[in-house]
Length: 290
Image 1 (tube, rainbow, N blue to C red):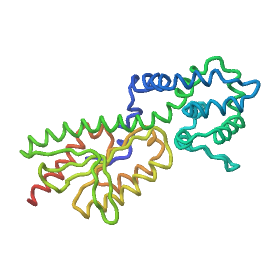
Image 2 (cartoon, rainbow, N blue to C red):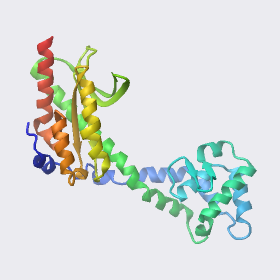
Image 3 (cartoon, rainbow, N blue to C red):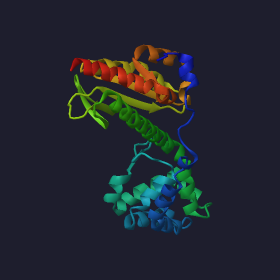
Image 4 (cartoon, helix red, strand yellow):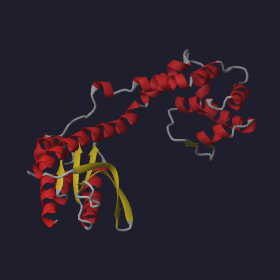
């Protein structure tokens, strides 16, 4: 198993998403459909004579309009906090909306400038769709991670089947496995063990980085090295499968990562046989001790 920085970089997968995964059009349409009534009510808002009173009345009688307002300012967290101390807690305010509170919230969105902007919007529904499309890059990060996990999971299952035939043993793959370590409980992406045995032989962590940054450079060389040590205390081997073009400009981090972690490779390397080799070594050693 080559532990070469150049090889790691040359086998990186630039992106894991296929064309059909890039934008979840169905989810966007579903979200707009769920809010169609609130969008129509907000579209009818009187933005000229007394928008504060009109929006306050709408929020009082139809508090879910607040979800449309939240979308229109592209604010995904469930709480909005301003420098002057004013706060909108979207979930809480929807459940306990009253006229006084509705007026406070309406004033906040007027001060933000949303109503002035809506005067120039012909179709509020199209505007909401545009915001949802604009939020896709953030959603896409999670989608990449989930897609990568799915691809690796299938590879793990196929590799495990081959090992079962080779070693004449039954193995099981467990997703999101909780492992009790010293002073903490760690959830690993995948755990592998001999069927009907309590002990875990291998813990597999996967991650995909589409952009360079501090997270990958800090996570694998440092945090995973510590996790590897803690897992080793319980006779569990750590395997890390990491990928994505975010690694390309972080050669020093890759060097540290390959030095610190016993088993660490890209998806292409895993498919080439690195994963099977690592699991074979671990399983062979475990069976010797039985």
